[in-house]
Amino acid sequence: MKGILLRTTQAAFLALTLGAGSAHAAGGHGDHAGHAAPAASAPIGKPGDPARVTRSIDVDMTDAMRFTPARIEVKAGETVRLNVRNSGRIRHELVLGTDADLKAHYDMMMKDPGMRHEEANAVSLEGGGSGQIVWRFDKAGTVSFGCLEPGHYTAGMKGAVSVQ
Image 1 (cartoon, rainbow, N blue to C red):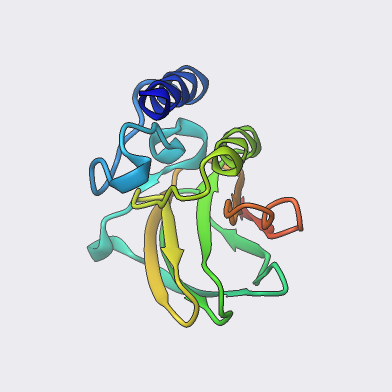
Image 2 (cartoon, rainbow, N blue to C red; image 1 turned 90 degrees about the vertical axis):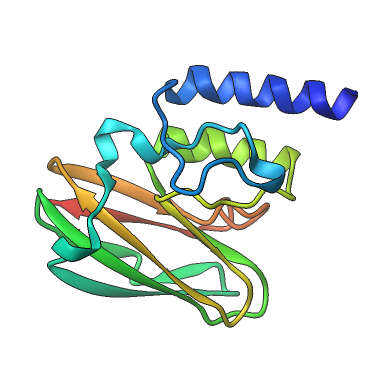
């Protein structure tokens, strides 16, 4: 019962923090069910149509707690396919969001490290795995990304997309 109450409290906190209009590409999932992710937050864009991808960008995640590249440049309105590869041995993920969204979400991950992401703005991969995010970057500005696995984000596993 305590776990259910904790998850309900966490979901309510995130709904208030991130907005109730968040979208889930794959619906509820496992330990992350009922959790509002920043996928539909207006400042970061929205899930993209794969038929409208203008280019693909390869992003590597490593056990050195780094993304390569850590800085990506796109044009406002561009739909991009991020081909994400985990060349490490441990689980890593790439989650797009605002700095505030990522920090709040990371704090929750520290309390419940078993959560997994299946939203349109995230890919979570075991060592050696690969996946994709198709994203439309609507507005000029900066969209952050990070690995929210416990310890990774604070170790510097973060980056940014500069939207021109």
